[in-house]
Length: 255
Length: 177
View 1 (tube, chains in turn red, purple):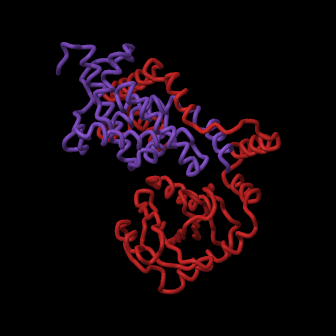
View 2: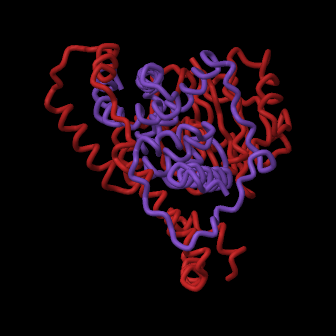
């Protein structure tokens, strides 16, 4: 390894982000090259410099008080069963794998009446893959897809493109779920197609919950800011959850 | 989730990160008064949007709201403050090697360090705070700041070179190489 190759690796190395394969080679170079060795030690000094406690601003007391005074203060006193239930759930959430926690969440919170809806979602997904009717509007531009729904639906679905997160938008479609017209956005990861169905929510906001897989398809649904979202794909559940997270995180739906 | 549950969860998961929220706001806004406003608004927004919190990393989630709140605030209150157009051409930082025989020791003078950090362009500053003070990984910073990982890495590397340059100058005033 020469200096040219070593230089860009010094920062990731200091941050613990260098891949194992390159570490050994870089360490050998740092020992043999005094210029790079000094650059590395300077960086370590700088990192130490920036981590000193004196640089960290802690929240002033009055800020904490002001925030508390602006939060709603409903009557305290939680029924013991509820407190117990929550604490237990927290332990499970932090301790278990995400999928186990999700599975529990599904078992604990999902009424079985949602199963037929999940089936309808999967059927619609499969239909969209079989027929040539996957896309009504073919565009990777959210500013083309969003207006396309105008006048076709009595609501305006949030449309986002997740190119950077490697879930590019490929288009949109009108669909019919649960007796209503809904928006369907189609995303892609590699060769996998993701359908995201959106319609106005009747229920309160809810966290993403995975339904039991149907015919090999994973289904996740959640509600946020007045919209219900159901997404379905043959992607594995972990990646589909990543998609859900990226979609939710990409510019929160403004009030 | 009813209102009371939401409040309890929020107090349990989000409020413990108020220091981190204020610290980021303080470094971005550059003074206590504005930082308190930004941190307060962000905290209340976080409560309103608590429904969209996916139960993953509450600190990262809160800080992403602080960040968005800050940039909205910046556009409204300091429209004159232009964000630096960051590209490799305009902000080329020369090679960090000083030709020195030995490495610098950590700089203990917090005031001088504070001054050096405050002198960074805001997009660089936030990456430094998130990496060095909050200890987020490149991937977490990329998600939080909504930029590709490559951008996180290049901004971080350049921010560090700028800091080293201004701190070295601070401590060796005669050394204006």
